[in-house]
Amino acid sequence: QVQLVESGGGLVQPGGSLRLSCSASGFSFSSAAMSWYRQAPGKERELVASISSIGGSRNYADSVKGRFTISRDNAKNTVYLQMNSLKREDTAVYYCYKVRSGYWGQGTQVTVSS
Image (cartoon, rainbow, N blue to C red):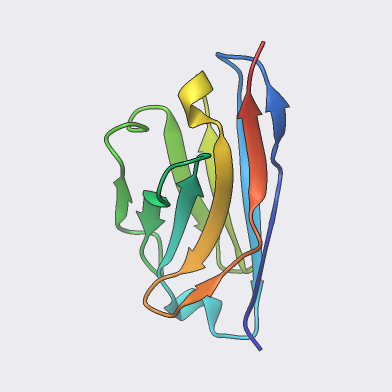
């Protein structure tokens, strides 16, 4: 049974940082590409970042390039999203996704506000 559990969200001031984690189980994590998506109120879910199975390839949405970093630790079955220089427009629920699988985590809320 595939499970993806996000953590690390919260309230942060503009310019601050957060690190999201997604703990995975129920599949061969080291063989799977992973992504982070986000969905802001009233907006469609959008791709934030993706990482290949061994981490050699990473892709980012233009809106987060230079501020966010996706990484993974295959020994811990965990994918991370380091978010720096956060902006109010980064406020959203962030979801972990196993690429091409249909499996999503439950989401973690990130709120950027002063």
